Image (cartoon, rainbow, N blue to C red):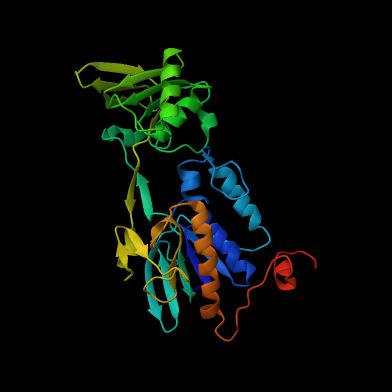
Length: 338
């Protein structure tokens, strides 16, 4: 059994910064995430997309933000448990016993839910044969855009993700952009850029079309798309990307006895504690009057939740707020000299 002062559920930006705040005040913590990588939605959904609302950082990508947060955690030894979903949380005396689907068990007085919007998975193509090519030629997110260089890529969708990637990949790939409607849901500036690239022959644009078939034996060879007027086109392609949004699921969290409203967890604004003592919620998954779903809001919430954890983790010690610029204790934890 893993014993720790606090267990963080979610390895996105808010979870990473909360871990930093816990370690800074001398508490141990471990992090569990159901994804196979650190970074949460920043890495899963928009690793290359610019973020503009991080204080003192004019612009950074999701990947850069994740890497910066990991660099901030370097002085500390934090154990990550990836590809594991928390299935069970139950109270035993003054501790929470937490079990994952990988049978990892934790004993902790504090559980911090920093899981974004809960467990999520992409909406997938209705054509069942697409499953055969998933993670080799059919993708619902992009982790390494370099694999598409010099290839033909067919992108489906009409929102920001589809449009942004169509523009980006058109620099080094042949791009087909297919959307079931005439109108796009993305930012107007990006829509205009796509339309201009289409006029210049950099993007092949197909509106009012949907995929009806995908073909290939060992590798993907082509797809069939059908218009509203029943016109069928066969397109030779190396890769297919689908950007249809996410299906949000709270998953097992829904059974933990928390005060849940519209897939978010109600918290107070002093400790960001839920209706269960010792369980906190920070980031997009929590809700309170005036809540803003911004990364910087999650940082603030995580900092306050970390301080609240001290009382349960160290009941015989009094927490004293310390400034990192003057506190010898905090500098020591950061591995710096006085």
